[in-house]
Length: 136
Image (cartoon, rainbow, N blue to C red; front, side, top):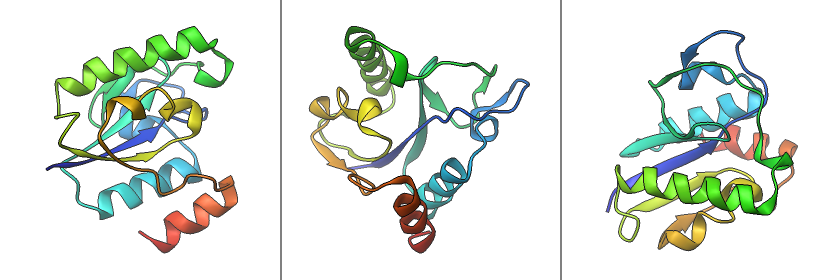
């Protein structure tokens, strides 16, 4: 069983094309990435509202899109695309997924994954930041 970490994108980004890992700029994203790396997982991916599943070294352009403003049908479609992308990298039934993302980003992904941990579930942003710093 491989361990994979999925981190949601954030609204604050660089203004130019960059590797996904460097494009997103916020204390939450940076703390989530530090925590994810401390786990030494098989892989870390970013859940992007525009691009779906991103490898950390994938170069992308900045964008202004979030699942928060999408209709339910659009979010479901996005999740189906991400699940198809995940199938190329891992075993949805046997690998373990640690998801660092809000409900909107994980709601339609989780039913497709058999082994899921959501360590930040139910926490407000300040609590999440504190938890991430304590566990990195």
